[in-house]
Image 1 (cartoon, rainbow over the protein chains, first blue to last red):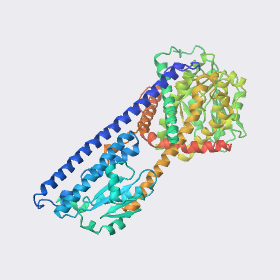
Image 2 (cartoon, rainbow over the protein chains, first blue to last red):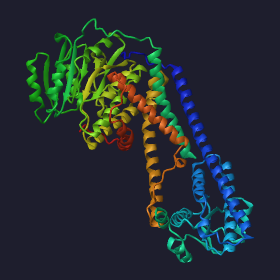
Image 3 (cartoon, chains in turn red, orange):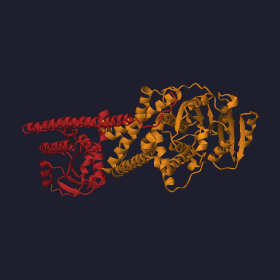
Image 4 (cartoon, rainbow over the protein chains, first blue to last red):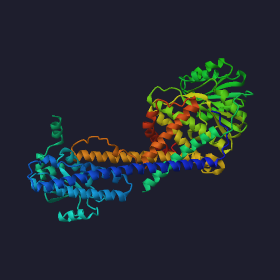
Length: 233
Length: 407
């Protein structure tokens, strides 16, 4: 490299070119970020389609069972679908920002799928005398529910420990007709977090011990570790 | 919302500055016609002042390296100024007076600027240099610098500074930082905007130093104060990256912290003294972008540091709460779905990539090789978390004008 003896006079073309390149980098970063977010949305849509197909299958199964005995159906057939991971992915997408209208639409669809799944499972369980465990969880992420995060953590831990447990989580403020009907049928007040277990509503944070006390039948469910070990055998 | 606006603005400014230097570099590489002959037609008399205080361990190597410089003997002298050392520095330096080019003086301790001024008063050399007593020079260094003084507008020339020893991880990280500094020093000089004439082997035109009144205390950074004064007076400061000097670097975080607090404190206090230059178009690139960016970079580093610390604290609190309410430690799971692809993280990756590119260019300019030093991963991962510590301390101390000591 040659030694430097240039004058210090500003060369405005350098300033302009640097500005354009920096602006281009920002625009590219925005584009790439949006591209990956759109990919995530597409992933979630695909999963929602899968879940929808699963629910249709359950409903069809139920229709078939109207005329046939339940001998071929057991609790293991009621294992939760990809619904749990879908909920986590939607939470992440919402926290990341992005196209809020698109995310709200995905959440609405997700809530509808949850309600349909819940109803189908309940009907199937009643018909076949099965005893699945359901928890309906109502939360708010508007910043008015300081305990919702901890409640969500507890329920996630339960879902991981008991794969057969069906936790349906609903954004209380989501304007979906079916969800508002569910809220009104179960008489859930805007006092969150709220859990509906066996038809009874519990308000405020419920610890793991409290939920285990409310739901003694949890002990009858297979745990993740026992499922893993039986699979290994 | 305000947080996002500040974050993106600072990211834009930081990226803009890196890209501005890169663009200026490319323009210089492809468009510039400032090729200079490095052949020396005449050999002006050169005096190198070695100010030293308690440097008994390094002074011999420093003087020996100066005496090994390729330069006519009758046009070269070494002036060692012992600034009131309490060890054997003076005694050791005296032994070199057997060589007629070496002159050793002793004075009461008064700071580096006073030692430099004593040296200045003891010589009639046309060019006068400084070499810290913890540094050694390559034999060709002086010739590389002297050739640039053939341009009469040049008041000072800075060298290419390399780390002398890489004995531990901290010094390996500093080696990467010094490579980045080689690029920055080169480009700042190219933009006529160098505002530091570092202690290790910067050479000055003696007549200009005298005209400007010699060295001043400069808030313990007389090398920065002198450069700003030269710029203020309209003189040019050039850079000769091929003039290689190896300088000692702190071996411990404590010493590094102390050194960098002094440097940053000196910069901030000198910035106040020379505030009329900041944002002033009359000073060209220096006033328009270099000085403002140097100040903004301190604010940006502190802002991002506290932002990361705050976000980490919130995350840690959430994880702690999760463990508390569930009684279990969450299993770490990896899924591409959760890979952070926010605009912010992409921009941070771009900024890191640009820094690596500038380090590679620093290596190219300083050593002729594009390879990154082996300490680069450590530098990227850890050094950026060390820097805000001394920046923050220096900002507080500068605000309260506490002053800083050399040691």
